[in-house]
Structure formats: structure tokens, C-alpha cells
Image 1 (cartoon, rainbow, N blue to C red):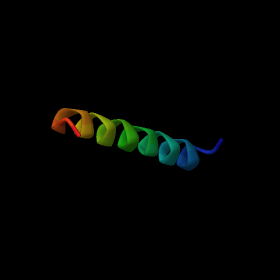
Image 2: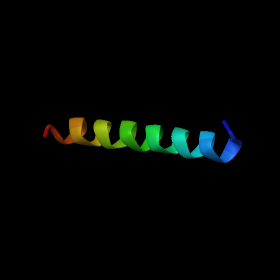
Image 3: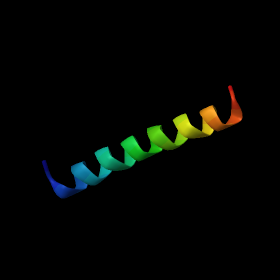
Length: 28
């Protein structure tokens, strides 16, 4: 895996985690 692909993949994972916790925090 190239560095750019790895960073992109990692950023998407972080995004998913962030939106999941935001939704949980709102109680939706």
C-alpha cells in the first residue's frame, strides 16, 4: 500500500468513527 492510500484509508476510518460518536452523543 502506498503512503497516500494508507493515509486516505486511515482518514476515512477516523471520519466514520467521528460521525459514529457524534450520532451516539446526540442520542439519535
